[in-house]
Image 1 (cartoon, helix red, strand yellow):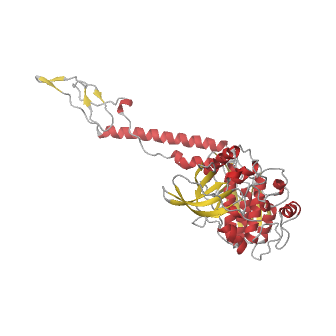
Image 2 (image 1 turned 45 degrees about the horizontal axis):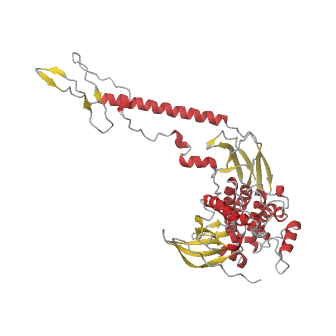
Image 3 (image 1 turned 45 degrees about the vertical axis):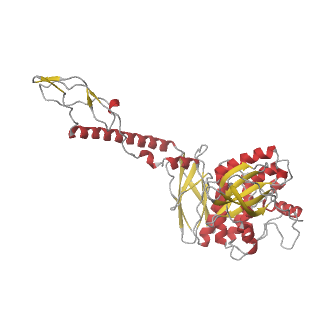
Length: 477
């Protein structure tokens, strides 16, 4: 089948066209230079033949979502979205390399590198799921690489949006990386189907081919769909791929959605366990949490810290008593101006000798300032005590995990516990001695070797506030 020629690049205000970067089934990507600020950018422009009013409206909604999600370090950054003068919607994006989508078919990628990529991309998918967004087109060619060698997920929601339109059939569907229930039109996408696609993508990066592709065999769309529905993925066939990783990918691509990891985060935990098994540094989870978004503005611990004393206009403060010598009339009323200005005396005077003279203004004594400081300090201490008491009361009200059980298998242990009564938005903070992790599932898998001891505690977190930790549960391998 002949490959189509790229469409003509649109004229975009503030951008200068340079060259074509690539073409897809529904869009072309061009290299432009942005005039201010000056930088090179990738501009994805939809083809005019797939555009209608409905697609434009859906494109704009998806572009807004993608722009919000692109703050994630593993999601492609979107700078701008608009419609060109000839009516084609376009996205202005960070310039990245698509070399990964070609490289995995040419060479065997190191297992540690694939694990790192898988965890970072799954972190982006988990963050999107928590924002209520499905990608629905996870595959190796949609993983780009930034100038700093960081993998990022692209085409967030755009391909799926087009796939739901009436413009063409299955335009957003990538068969080799689509779950059986999606291919059978049972659903347009779920968390479980995204986990399947994540597993298929990691499998592809390791094997150099999609999971149900037969080298030298029949690999038409109908052949792939038949195998995805009936067969199991063949072993990857690399001696450096651990059996534990093979098993994790098989679980992720299980035929039944309920047999797969329940979330992208659970899939991440399995990949991290493999990292620990092969002795490489664990790739951190990068998942945005609603409760920690609050802590970003005001750190949880900072709520009880004193940030300084704000100067107050004395007109709003109660009058201070002044000491005066006996036999001296009371000083006239004084008009207090704001801090930093001089004190002005009223027109009242008192006799002195044969005439009149203004009554001298007494400056505050050192003792006065000491008393004010003590009073302010007492107020601050009272506020701190109140905040601590409130926080303590809140902590006592949060549910607590009471009993943790452990099921040990060869090379790993699964800790589990009963739901103590979580509410919407609550999370479990699991601490294992290193950096704590947050999750929704009431279980945690850890890897270990003979002679190791793994200990965990579980704490309920609600809107940035941590409850009482559970008792520590330890297992020896």
